[in-house]
Amino acid sequence: MSKVVPENDSPYARIVDLQLQLKQYAEAERTLQSALAINDTSPFLHAKLGLVNFWERDFNDAARHFQRAVEVNQGGHLLPASDFSKAYYHLALSEIQLGVVQSAKLNLVEVLRYQPQHAEAGRLLALLKKGVPVQLQF
Image: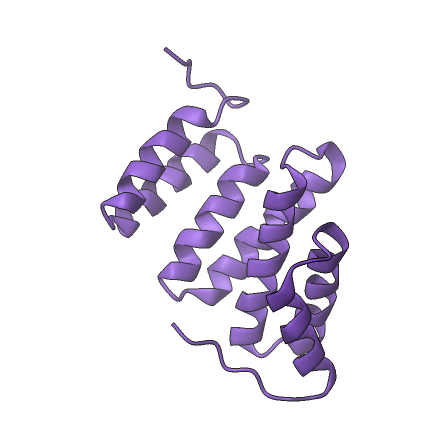
């Protein structure tokens, strides 16, 4: 059995994944907040909480947690490149929803740096560069 210590996020991840499968978003958010109270430097926990906030359409908190995931990951490269790219992508989507277009463009560039084949990031970046208003569909 895994010990729940700051450097071991997997027990929280398992619980949160089950809560998300059951669409228990509020419970998942509480679990992640508890985990972050123990380990605020986990890019994984911040990215996961950012996703929960995003699904709940709380784009301010989503952007804050995705930004934190990106910041704490840059020094240690704890997230794999694909997950790091996803954090940047969802940060950009959150910023698009908040109307923070310049920052969204920069974050889409980062997505493409890590995943050059990411077609949707490329499409969104092209639209934003042309000044086309982007509406995300949920």
